Image 1 (cartoon, rainbow, N blue to C red):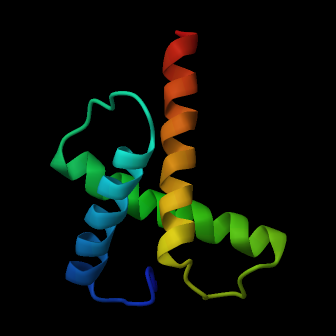
Image 2 (image 1 turned 45 degrees about the vertical axis):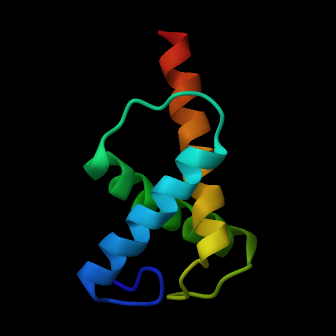
Length: 88
């Protein structure tokens, strides 16, 4: 699996952390998540952006989403989780 254009897990975790931190800084409001969930947010944002990009036709099969798209994907996930938490 190639994520962020690499199959090196340390690189994926590091970039996932950066994407997660940037997404949390750009989305208004408080997000109660620690270090590990921030990494998971960044990685999930990249997967989400890649999935949407392939569905729309922006990316080919096996092509990784870029940094900006991954950050936008992570922000979208933060909004989705925030919306679902408010419904309860």
